[in-house]
Length: 317
View 1 (cartoon, one colour):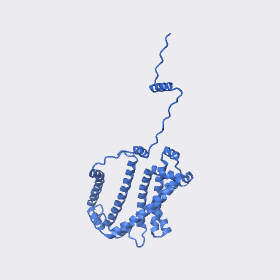
View 2 (cartoon, helix red, strand yellow):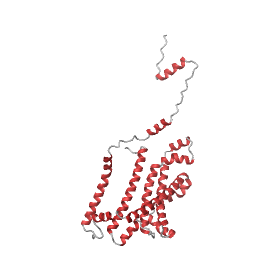
View 3 (cartoon, one colour):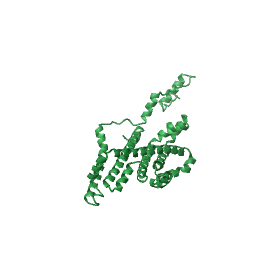
View 4 (tube, helix red, strand yellow):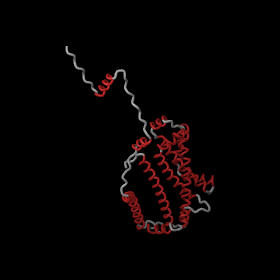
């Protein structure tokens, strides 16, 4: 009987491999040399994980797209304010018109005393917030690192964050009398828990795969936190910083109204003096000043947060 032809192999690559082995008897497969990536190639691979830089377009158009919703909101508030004033809901000396308030505000910002009060208030705010960030970062890193410590004070941190700042002032006055320390105490204890919780949340959501990769690369102790855990938790940490600033700013304004430090004239003191004189226009002017400062600081945090998210490819832009 004629011999049947051999069945065709399913994979051409396998057939070629067998032919090669048959042709070179006694010679095994040639080992392939592993190519080591250079530093430039590694940086290029890292860049692939991030979004390409968007086309920025015209600066004026981007500024307008960002500004017009805010301007519209301001216009709506002024229209409603004017309508309530014209309805004579309250007497004019109690509820003044927007024009009267803006006139008072214009005269106020041209005085040196006003800027002295703003400088004092901002110095307190920056100092208290910096202390809160330092304390909150240390506490957050320690709690996320040691499980017994988290079990002991994890819920306490959240409880401190939910407490109204005004509740701390009687204790602060008893401890530090009417001094700067009383205000700083309340500002720090109001902001530090938010900073700590932001860091704890960010560390908790670091992918386990990243931690295993860091362990394989030999990262341990402080090096692991510095080069892996803290950068990975940065988006959540920035959110915690933003919330911490909001708490510290509110605590500071309450402190300046309640704790009058002799020899200092801050925004809160000036607002309290205006209330004592029944100067509603000046009171509302200082309210607007506090509001504007808070919005400007919030915009700085939003800019940092958006830049960080774009850098790590967390936005669609």
